[in-house]
Length: 147
Image 1 (tube, rainbow, N blue to C red):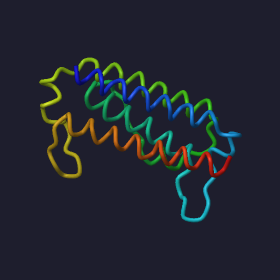
Image 2: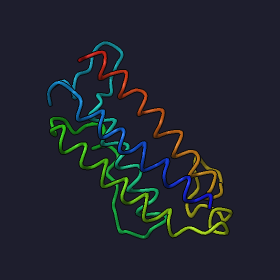
Image 3: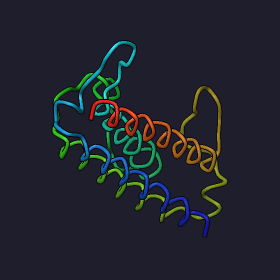
Image 4: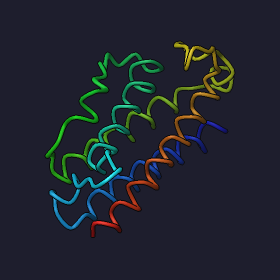
């Protein structure tokens, strides 16, 4: 089924993000910013975890998760292990919620408007996967730059 393929991609890429975070040479390097680079890999990891916990956990899965998006970008200093664990827990949330979606659910409207528009669950999930991979690429590049 389509949702199994989608689930597998989210789990794969969230776990890859966790591996990237763990591959940093130090906890301090995870939080490095320079010049026009305002978001550290630590903040990007926290942002990805918050994004999944909000859109999959709270919105689609009714988990009760309350997102504090500003903290995803302002928090500093968590260890590589803490950020990687947050990403792996987000992978578990995505896995659980996507497994429960039927093909009919994918065609239904996403419960919240996105950028002022009504979109389908399938559209939103595709957006979330591309968003994840955009930031995964940034984390990979950042790690190689500071490593």
